[in-house]
Each structure stands twice: as structure tokens, then as C-alpha cells.
Image (cartoon, rainbow, N blue to C red; front, top):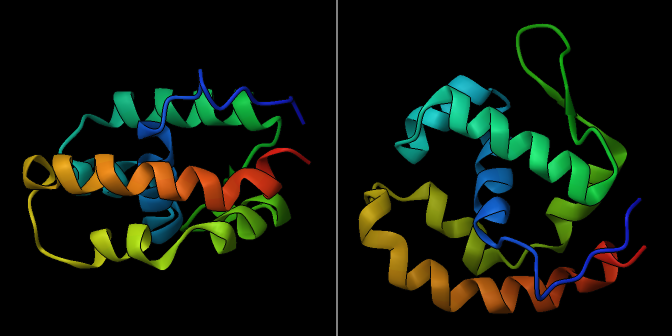
Length: 114
């Protein structure tokens, strides 16, 4: 895995990762995030590069997480993951996500540094 400089890491990618782990589909994650399939696919590519792991691989009807992805998602604070279980629109989440992402980064730092 690549060493990650958290100061340069795009925290928006963690939101995409979380939704991908829930949906296990780039298309469904894009719909949920209000983005294009291409944009989410590009974000997944960036995540894979940053983490040095495939994270999610094709397997049947849904993408399957790697062991690293499962370990990483367990590091995410519940507050950050709760956001995606609500019906709030993505634009309304901007302030909440900004406030929570610093906390999420701190909590996931041990997994990111492996």
C-alpha cells in the first residue's frame, strides 16, 4: 500500500468509498451521491491508487470488498457512516460532512498508515 499524506488526501473520496461499500455498485452509488457513474468510477480509481488496494472487485451482481476495504470501513466513525442512511440530499450534507471528515480521518489514520 502507498503511504498516504493526509494533508493531500481528498476527503471527499472517503464519502464516495463509504457509499460504494453500502451500495456495492458504482451506478447505484452515483445515483445516491447525485453524481455521474463516470465521476464515481474515477473516484474509485483514485481511491485504489491512494490505498494501493483494489478495494472493490467485480463478483456476481454486486462488487465484493477486499479484506483491506472491510478493515478500512470498520475504522470509519459511525457518525460519518450514519449520513448515508438518511434521506437528506447531498447538498444539505456539505457542512455536516466537512465537520465530520476531520474526525473520520483521525479515526482511520491507523489503517491508512499500514
